[in-house]
Amino acid sequence: MIDTLDDFDVEGTTVGVRVDVNSPIGDDGTLADDARLRAHVDTLSELLERGGRVAVLAHQGRPGGDDFVALESHADRLAELLERPVDYVDATFSDAARETVRNLDDGDCVVLENTRFYSEEYMEFEPERAAETHLVEGLAPVLDAYVNDAFAAAHRSQPSLVGFPTVLPGYAGRVMESELDVLGSIEATPEPRVYILGGAKVSDSIDVAWSVLEKGLADHVLTAGVVGNVFLIADGVDLGDASSDFIYDQGYWDEIDRAADLLDAYGEQVALPRDVAVERDGDRHELGVNALPPQDGEAAMDIGNSTLAYYRRILEDAETVILNGPAGVFEDENFEQGTRQLYGAATAVETSIVGGGDTASALRRLGVDGFSHISTGGGAALRMLTAEPLPAVTALEDGPQQQQPADD
Ligand SMILES: Nc1ncnc2c1ncn2[C@@H]1O[C@H](COP(=O)(O)OP(=O)(O)O)[C@@H](O)[C@H]1O
Ligand SMILES: O=C(OP(=O)(O)O)[C@H](O)COP(=O)(O)O
Image 1 (cartoon, rainbow, N blue to C red):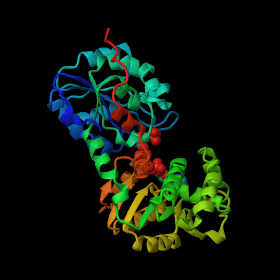
Image 2 (image 1 turned 180 degrees about the horizontal axis):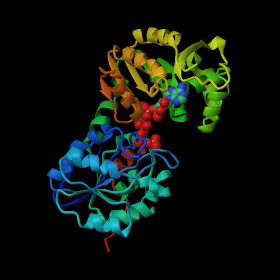
Image 3 (image 1 turned 180 degrees about the vertical axis):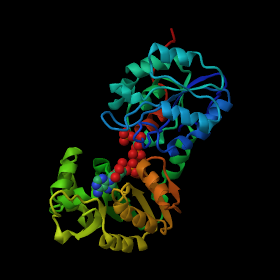
Image 4 (image 1 turned 90 degrees about the horizontal axis):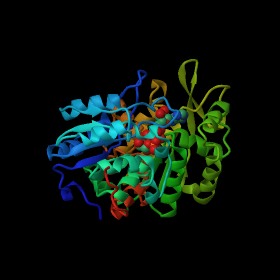
């Protein structure tokens, strides 16, 4: 049982609020899409209006990525959305950060720096060990309580997600609460149930496929995006050097064997693309799987029309569809078609549940709507839909295991 904001006597307390504002970043290194910030406005406004002193904790990107940036532009946008001043400090648990948090008044809000600027935050720990990291040991003494609203990161066992609730009273924010309500009962959704796994998180998607097929939750798993490309290679298709190099460079080469094992075990229920789209002379060019490999340098960037027709037929009989990850490189207009049409077809299914930060932004951009539920989480939503526990949720459920460290 998790405590929510309804159980929290907020006034006058200093609260660390973990949100997930991991968002697309523009060429200038600043926030390019505020959808994930908007999602947390209710939780943050409620805490501030109830007299909380709020220190916002969040990550942005992954080390080494172009979107691995500071949270200053997030803080600026949050101030606009909350319609009140929001401070920003370029550190998370330094003396300066702690001093800023100590000096908050009731109704004040500060955004602390990208938690992943500290290497510990990009590691996974058991909660008790996470509580001993520099981040948690440094910051917990200036906090009275912890609110986790970061459903989209709840599948990560990282210090800011599992460490704080081990040493502080923890509460689910409003986003976390509603996501757990909606996604907590996949067994109750009508069958046949189809999972569509696209996008680029290959190992997460293969975990999900194994789990939903083993548990009998999925009648069909349709593959697309980079996930579909990995399954094609696992099935013996020669996708050419460009796609293979991409998969290798992303560190997903070992996933090909896992995909092949899955096809051995559940091949009849796993659908693979029947054609792919490549770029040729600046245009989209579709190739049936039998016509592969493509020419040198051409990569499989989208699913083609014959795959769409095949997947549409499966969706016509479905009562529930669960989607994660775009079907292709939707950012390029030559390759947005697969995502637009596949997701469009999914809106006709009685219960349609979508997860994923990039997926949600693809849908907004392509103007596809009409889903039963669009989750703020991608990997977290899928993990939850397979009925696997989310470490950050378990840590909230378990509650404080250690004495709260004293502020000195
Ligand atoms: N065939 C493909 N080749 C390369 N990248 C792809 C392909 N299909 C989809 N992608 C990329 O996958 C990314 C989104 O995947 P992912 O992060 O898994 O989605 P989400 O955030 O919704 O979980 C997009 O940037 C898109 O360009
Ligand atoms: O964007 C996120 O996940 P998602 O892409 O699965 O929605 C979360 O912020 C988690 O980020 P991570 O996958 O870098 O740990």
